[in-house]
Image 1 (cartoon, rainbow, N blue to C red):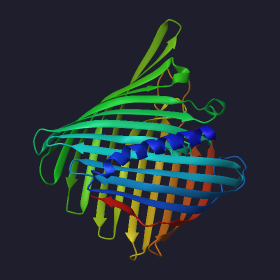
Image 2: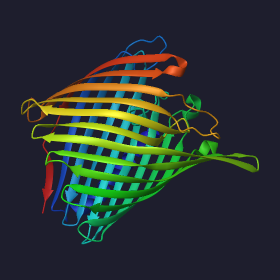
Image 3: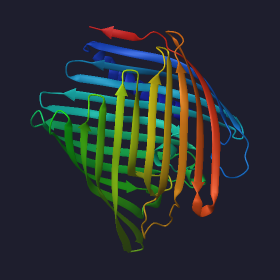
Image 4: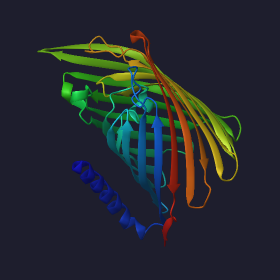
Length: 397
């Protein structure tokens, strides 16, 4: 545990040190602290089809959001933690850490940006809701770094280049059958605004996925994508993006290397309606993600997001998702993942009953099906969270 405290302290000091020099030069520098206490009940925390008992959890979640800006510079980020203790069906203590950071520096025609940070979460909280695949229940440490450069040729035409790096490590991964992985990638995006209502973008990308513990297996993804964003009205927008991805995988057998190539079509479409007091959004996507199984996962997802301010202090939300996930088929992959179907539906209610206090109540229904194994796992979870928001701290010129 001590090493994670050292990591947390190091990252916190780094972020603070990076922020302090800008305090004097920023038009405004702000920090918004908070601390929450949550109780949780889950009938099947690890989504197992085997006999199990209910699990109870206690969360303590301190955090602070910070930001600053000058005429050219924008900085925003967050430093937060979850101290979690589970009892009952699962006896386990967890420490989640979140350190996202976003920096933008703009010139007349150039924009330099950085998005990334460090996250320590668990596989059933982070990776499950990204890929739709249930892994063994353990903690994941992940670095994400994405520096980018954007050049505006005209008011309508721009080019953006991005480098992406990701590294994931699993606690007790070898014992649980999970493999650490690294991802290097890059993309070039050419954007053109056809009109006030239409925006088109062409993207070329390349990704290198490797598993250090199985250095004979490596996958590369090269592809392109065309996207179009259209505003039907001031409050209704839609985006559709589609393109092919060529997945090339190779494995070493002595002095010989066997390779296999497969083409996969990926895409994303969404429609969003905005009101003064809420929004509704429908999302459909097919994407390729790295996974702790040491495989590339093809995930198809349908999602619905709804939010409505019932009163000035009461907000009702609904988030629902259906995932279909399986490994990207390859003749050289030593193992394959059968198709998984995962359903997650979460209605929630937020009541800000005071300037400093908010109460969140949520229910989550989860269902996991693996048809080839004739397995079904269902979970019902409920949480109640009380959060205190101290006064916002602001430093101006």
